[in-house]
Length: 296
Image (cartoon, rainbow, N blue to C red; front, top):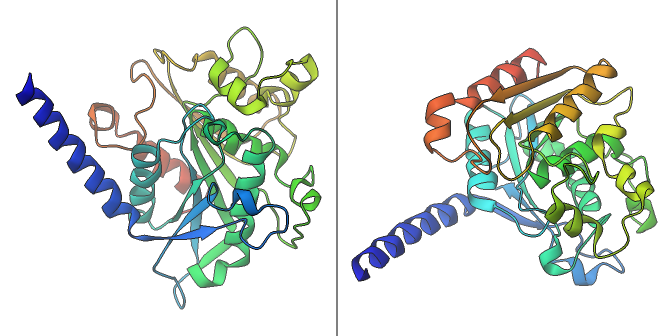
């Protein structure tokens, strides 16, 4: 028993070291710093930006990475920094977003405000990082998939930042989104209830509120290109979430790709586990990025 505990302790230590090593490549950008009225939020919202800059290089695409965690916590290592490492390897500039979550008593619309602030920062500093402002996407896992879809649906249209006194000349909407095993709906029949409770808080969920945050009911006619991935055996977020999103995109003739796997479950992120080795799903994603001309 003691030997098993020791082995587990060593394994977790190595995992932590890997996480810290990857994270050390990024600078912390406190998106709400010096914003009047947002002082208590400064340390809860952090954009991890690459330390190396792209000045003088060909303009590259960029991606905001939103880990999942039921809008309650965040899976930063396997969904955040593992994804950043892969995007960097294919020439896409990665930014990992630590957005506000219910663990720290945050609820809607604060998560949407955070991703909009991240996109604002990247577009306004595009020259520093060598980024093409028309090729800024967002990938999100689980609840993070709901968040990036919401950014594609609502991005800037509801004046969230204006209400906080934050003015901007740039678009707050990503150019493409990639919801991976995403939470999609807030409807009673198949919603992920922990995500809904964390997002909407402890209140009466009126039908109007559930409809407003059910992404399949709000896809606009100009929705950005979307890549969905889901597994039929997902034990956490019911597969039908992704089916409803795909149907809504198809109904509006939105360019999209739906990658379906029979087995894979939930929460694998981009860690080098069995699912990645079996499917190489990131290669399918890479091909899609080529198809929509984000990368060569």
